[in-house]
Every structure is written in structure tokens, then in C-alpha cells.
Amino acid sequence: MKKIIVVHLIPLLKRLKDGYLVNAYLEAGFELEYWDLGPFYKPSVKFSDELNEPYVIKFNNLDEVEQRLREIDKKQAVFFVQFHEIWYYRHLYRMLARHNCYMARININPPEFQPSLREVNFRGFFYHVLRWGVAQTYLYYKKLHNYKTYSHYFGVSDTSINSINQRYYGVKINEPDYEVSINRPDYENYLSLKDDPHRILEGKYILFVDPFFPCHPEDVGLSKENPVAKAYRIRMRSFFDWVEKRFQMPIVIAAHPSAIYEDNELGNRNLIKYKTAELVKDAEMVLLHQSNSNVFAILFDKPVVFLTTKELNRYPHLANKISGMAGFFNKKVYDLDQCSYENIEFSKVEPSLRKKYMYTYVTTPQTENRWNKDIVIEEFNRIFKLLEAC
Image 1 (cartoon, rainbow, N blue to C red):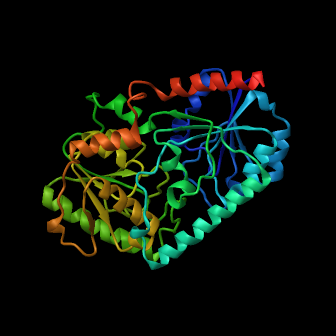
Image 2 (cartoon, helix red, strand yellow):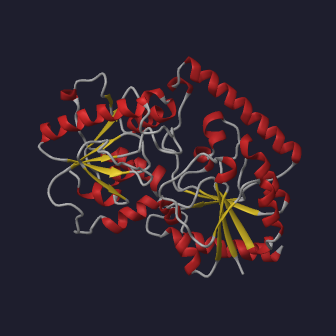
Image 3 (cartoon, helix red, strand yellow):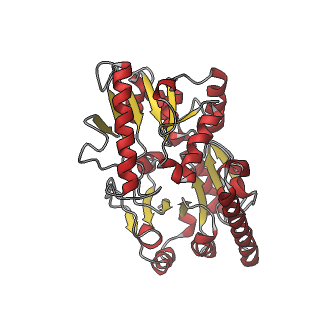
């Protein structure tokens, strides 16, 4: 029976299950396996919202992966490998290639800007030079061992934007045989909600899209007792208090799916998980740091403000995400430790920039009226015909 195998670094989460179209594969009659290599590559990373499904398989080392590969009919399987193709994962990619696995990649959260060396400090410059060297080393390694990785690429943007090596360092590690345009899953969520009159909350409110900083297990991963976490939350509570007084509306928190809040860390406020799109739809204004869910504020055309703090600025990869997205929209980033709150202004994105963003990072003219599940399953059926003909 035809099988879809998703290979990932982290456990199966609801957002991944939805984004990777797991239910659509099962409904179409495909078998499914989700290979979680987190216990091997990232043993210390834990998620509070991990899903337990019968098709999830956890691996503790690459020997276990290879044993499982020997048991699979490669002409009846497509491998969605959701790893960046970098030096650290070279042994896994080479193993999959050695077993003649047909590899694909689906990008559900494309990067939203291309950092340049002008955006990094002196220390960051040498970090990028080092990473460029590592990327070149991996390219040489790959040519030396003569193997190909993913043949199919599904995404909104092309691989020049979505390949971490090509985007940051100009190194083309892999050129897929087929590039298939899809929508960002958030776009389909937006389409299903934009005309829905139902509201989660009555009355006016201002929404904060929470990235669970600095405790997000993939980004920084600090404990809530860490001094950085405490200082950040004190600053945010103070700012939220001011906003509520200034605008006479409550702040509502669209809590990150992995967030754990137990002691009113962000104040005595309404925290709601798994409903970010619905909450953005009916919000009067939206407060943003760095989050994949920022896209909803743009799609629903809300007045926004981009915010940072000295704690966030300690982590350049996060600060760059904020400044990069704000810069795309010609928006200012307000540093809550340096600016006067009185000078903070909410505003909508200019229509021309919103349209440019939509057709660069969210959807395409070819896919905006189609559903991802139809595009991807149609392509899978074509792939399996190719495999059977080999």
C-alpha cells in the first residue's frame, strides 16, 4: 500500500498535523508514518502539546532508522524530510539517499525576509562567514559522496528563499527536480474564517500574538524562573497595563500552542490557545513580536505594532525576524525599554505591500483558489506512478 512518511526533528504537534495535511492523506487511502527523530537529535526539547497517534514512531539513533528503512518498499513510499539540509544532518540524508528513498519537502512556514550582512553586528558577520564555510564544506561532502536529496519541493516561495544555505550564504546545496506551488496553511485558515460572523469573545479588545518568549522549546528554551524571562514579563505586564488604560480595551493573549502559563506571568488576562486566527479576525488592533502567526494580522488587515525589548534583542535571530518583517512593511519597531509609550502608533499595512506579501509568502495566483490537499495528493499520485514505472 502506498505510504507517506514524514521525517521530523520534533514530535507531532497539532499545527504540524494540520500543516502537513495528515488527515487528508489518511482520507485519501494512504498509509502514514510520522518519524520523530527528536529523541536522537534534540533529546532535551520537550513540547507540552505533543500528540500521541498510532502512526508516530520515535527513533533514538540512526541505526534504528536504518533498520526501519530496510523493512520498507521504496517504490511504495514517499519521504517528507522536514530537516534543513545542513552539515549536522548529513548522515541522515546520505542514509536516505543510499536506500533510494524518494524524498520531498513541504514548507508550511516560509521565511519572511532575507537577512543581509548589513543587518548583523561585527560578531554576527564572523558567525555568517563561519556558517558560509560550513555550507561550502557540506556541498563538497555531498559532491564527494555523489548523492541527491529531495526531488520534490512544495512551497509558496522557491528554494532560493526557503533553502537556509542558499538564502543566507548563497550556496545551492540541492536543486529539486520538481517545484510545486502551494498555499501557506494559514491562508486557507483565513479563507475559511474571513466571512464567519461567529466571535469567540464579545466586545472590543486588543490582541497580543504570543511567541512564548523566552521559553519556546525551539527558540530559546529558558525556564520561566530565568532572570531574562522574569524581566521580559515584568516589562510586558507594565506595557499591557498602559495600553489598556490608554485605549480603554482589555489585552487578550493569543497564547502559543506550546505555552505553559500558571501564575499570571502576563498579568490577569484572558489567555486562549489554538484560536489565534479567530482572535485576530475580531481584534481592534494587534501587538506583534516574531511569530509565524503574525501573518493573520496582515491577512485580516488589522492595525499593528511591532515590539521588542532588551531581552528579545539578546537573541539576534529573533530580533532580526521582528525587524525583517517590520521593514518589509515600512513599519517601525518599538523598543519598550527605550521608547516613550506615548509615541507608539498602530497602523494598517499599505495595500500595495500587503498584496506583495500575499503573493510572495502566502499564496500564488495559481493556487489562491485551490486547496493544498488537492494539490499535494494530485502530485503524490503522479509521484507513485513514476516510482512504479522505475
